Length: 331
Image (cartoon, rainbow, N blue to C red; front, top):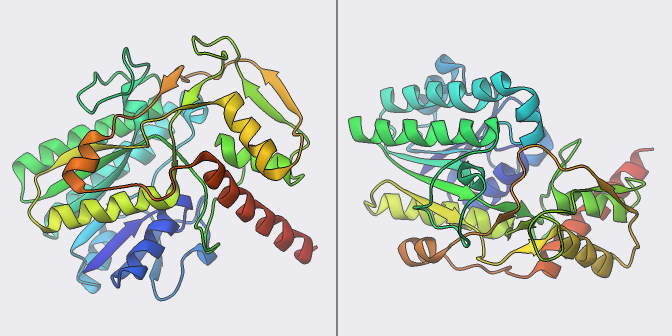
């Protein structure tokens, strides 16, 4: 199978490329390298530098490499940035996804995996959150992803294309073998930021809000190891290849950890007493997001392998230490 991975030079995308290569698939990466890194695309994957909104380029790539499936990661992902720049997020996440879908249909693509988000749920009334829960995004980021989900449903109804949309909860960690990890500048992901502080890349870290309606007043999230997440994508591809119907699945572990608990885990694993400073709440942050995962386990047969917070932190910290060592060598 020839698989086109959009955004495959980024954090999650690069892990997806590794997963597909490990499974013997042909992989073509399309990435404009605005946030991704050329060196994150491992051989023998093919890297095409370009934008998913460039329909002529996308069509050329699909035809040249006889692509049969698309896994779509390319997009903007920072919630506060989306609040400040909603039009940019609608352009990058929704308009460009629409352009990609149009080419996919024209080129006869039958299988499409979409990188969605738990942000489509907003601030849910019950937890854990099931896929049937009301969708009420609190940020343009969440809305932009929901709009693409709605487009996918309409496209699948009108054309011979089936899709799976995977709603990510909080992705963290790094490849257990150290082949890839999160290298994004200006990272906002909690575990990444805390690990940067632990290795001295940051002098301190901020904790946004301590007055949420949770046990310790800090936000609660469901953290999923990036390697387990990409295995959900390969399970989704296998499901579609076997004739599975279009569907939506949560990706998480059905357990939540507070910001304070995560910071404590990083301190424990690293042995470093991180300087943590209380800051104001961030716009668009709900109090609690924990995934209901019965559906993905039962329908796709997905089972996690790294369902342990300390393990997630260990892999993230190992990657951060590697980056720090490379930076030291370069200087």
